Image (cartoon, rainbow, N blue to C red; front, side, top):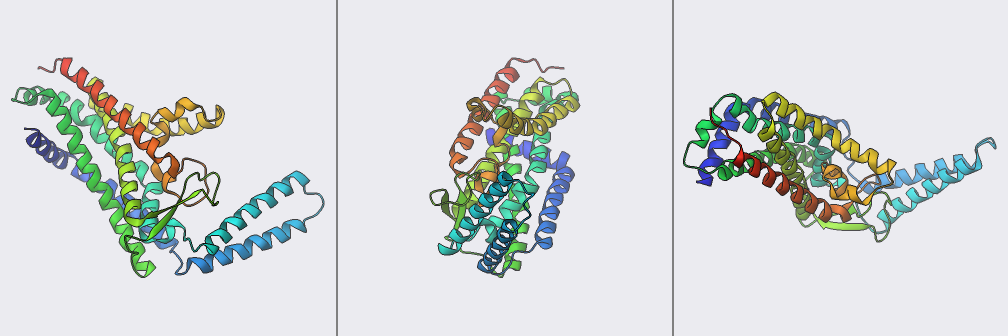
Length: 334
């Protein structure tokens, strides 16, 4: 029975929102391809790294010959930053470790997660938020519940159908960018190629802060973390859809939450000096881009991937359980 419900929900999603899904996916793919074509990856990462080292050394020499008016503290901090970057670039050369975005898989995934995943997350939240509220407004929800199927199966069927669509859309968004990247790269690396990620991107490229993941595991980790974030967005949307009086309110509330919570988490992390309780909310984990990065940046790293996945799944299950409890008790007749 659950399979029939899932198939029915997939048909309704495609029939009602195929144009929205195609347009958003095409926009994300177009953005990713445009970024890739605008900044093609060089054929030899070692030559690029040596060039960066030369530029950094020139910048350091220029800084040391700067006028005496430059504050000593500022000059020392810049020197330290340049030395750290020089050490990182030299470490990569000495150990023959290419950055993750040099490989087609890493570059395609990084491009989509950094530039387009936010739009996809809003799309999935939208679809979930209107799934029940729209049927209630159309007065077809009571008819659906009058069939010999439990409310638990109806809600799970909607959640599974949404996740299936999300998986297809993510793959459809990443594949064209991967193909374009491979064509520019001159080929596609083997699935056993090891891709670098940083355990803590704040520390940068240091011995002991680097993990080398097989390409197939890198792709799998990116998909799992992305789909876990999508699952939370959709579970939240379903919960709001159950509570809201109309589809407009449900969609607006869900999109507002998805737009506000992640920047709010970044502000709280800085203002409150990274409080422990923040790591147990789903807010910081809605964008998995920094968990699989090889570039020094602010944010989470690969060492946080397990915690991210666990927290996202716990919150998704919690939203679904609460939603199911409310959906079961609420009268949907009329």
